[in-house]
Image (tube, rainbow, N blue to C red):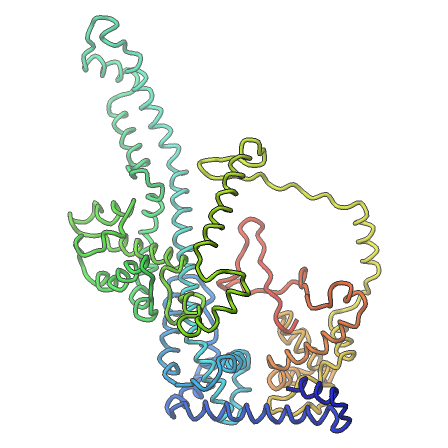
Length: 590
């Protein structure tokens, strides 16, 4: 609105009013619009729900954080107990009842902005807001958490299945194979000696004499006693079980032993997560919903389970447990069989969470019906496609076939590629040669860069760009406190580098005492202020000659900047190969 007003004033050669007048008008209109938005959401929320969301800002007795902060904090550990806590969190958020509030008049972009403000603001800041302005961000935050908690729970389920259960069971299965190799080697050596005696015995057709079984056993026992041979055969049968060609049998057997990890959260998973499915995933969802009833029973018959999902080595583990009576199903093996199908279907999106976003139905975001009919001509024109896909699919099929033929023709002469066990194996890429002039150029650039501390650089940039003027108080007023810029830079530095307030506090500097950064962080550090401060940065950067040569300065890189990441998170962990922690993505404040 402000840009359009300025363009109109310039085009019509209007000298008065000046730029400050439309700026004030735009600010006033935006304030009126925000007031109407807050009032609309306040009126739409019932009194009981309004009381519940405000109570989230309170800190319970003997607790250190508010209920809102607890609900905002996602799972950090990968375990069965953490999975139950994540599902309880999702159920608690949904139990608030915010999803029943009708806010059809409010645009989705505005509720997203309010939710972002509620998720990033501290509880004391939200608590000081006027009740009408307080209800709107809290309601939008709970709306967002209804979806986020479901996604967090399924993220944790994926991590639990992939790292703690499936991968660990496979590693334990491999370890068991390695431990059994010495016994297997000794047993195989004895069996090989017995078979060698049989092979050395001449056939009856060559000598004209028949060799009795007694004589054959006498020859074998001179090499390997019968008792040792029987023990060797038993060892081979135990170490190399009959798996019907299924390589997953051994690690699946190890997986069943960890049934206690998943038994506690399976009923909660079915209760809390509303799962939907396409046609391929419907049997998995149907079976999963009936699983809690089977887990609670003492014995389960083979006719009561979905035998279509029990395939491969699972059939022996589920239906042929030697410790159970004939016809009784192993509930632990059956539960893991269903969870493995669920994990695979979730990854393929054959199964999805109706209340989720990342794990939701991808078809929901597609245009359909009248909306697609209205947008179809523009979309097809922009993509250069026809309304009927047959021609385009035929073209893609032809190109794919040509690519296959080209690759297959080049396989015999390609020394960097080979096929091992039915899979393509590519040779490792060699080190790229560095240009001859690169080392002296790098040394020259390094010598030209000034050596300056990051806080000093941030203060200098803030003074040059006037960045601090963009940070207004939560009430809408500007800052009149003395030394506001150093306090703001201290907050930016602590948030961007994840170092906390302690390193930036200086008791002998009034602007950096412990109370000042905390006050600035609660009253001025908001997402909209950070977005507004990016404008002066971009404008100042565009005036630098070298930036214009690089393409306008609209792309930034944060490579080489190290950020501390908590170890107990779902998205960070030790790299098993290099034993280092991945660095976090830069925050908006950086």
